[in-house]
Length: 384
Image 1: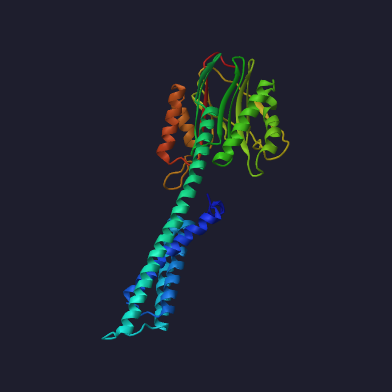
Image 2: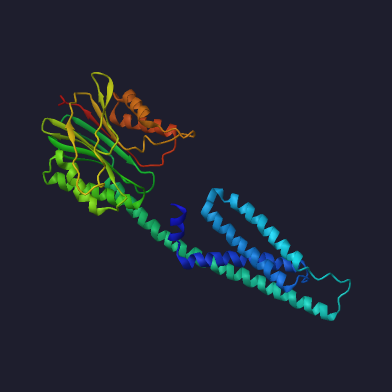
């Protein structure tokens, strides 16, 4: 969430009352200063010091929200400025000199001044507490409602993107999607029957609930097209036509698939990282790539796909760039080369072990900040 969207997302009444609470509580510092001076500070000076101290406190709160970890860079200069302004006012409007003895009128004036300061301090604390209590309750309710909606969306996401572990007529599948937050924008799926199936993976741009909703539309659209008999050669073009008007203009979807139609095995990519093909006979990994644009960029597009040959023991990996973009402390990304090397090293292992080895290797390199999804397909039959 950027700073502008943070302020736009705050209700105005809650924001106003929060800053009012800050003002009132820090105004007590100015009142306490007047008490410490035993009422000798001129009324104008006391009022100005109190108001300025409270206003600077609001400034500390604003820069704290806006700059977060870097807030000290602004708070320190603000504090120095606050100190200078208060002392300049004190110098321009000097306090009344303390007298050795006080008569009845002076004592009465001091008594009234202290009573006023005590009442003002108590009122400020009480009103500030009320402001903070209101903001806490209303924002707490808003948070709980939003949290409940996010948890519901996360549960829907888990139902839409479950772990895949299945076999179909000479092919074995294993896949998992690990979102970077509660709701992810990645999708893995295998649809069809033994002789005619499509394994696909999609990655919606962005993070959070919005991409998660688009991801759900991708799955429903893909399943609808495949169940209606749409051939895999035209799958990308038809998906693009359906999804283009259903998303925000700045959103797009990268997509890749591996489809079996009879004896033919076809691959297609739309702006997605290359599919990795481990050839068991050669103990080597090939990259299956294409120059197709992602889905949702243009209302109508042409997408090329191609036939691939795979033999018994071969393994194909469909994955999202969440694995590749993990960076270490030096800012160096894990990258495709390392991912391909790790894939080749463990390609003979069971698919679940390949997944675990790749995920652990990436996790050792750095912290996940994007959704990570991987779908592995092994040829166990005679191949194509």
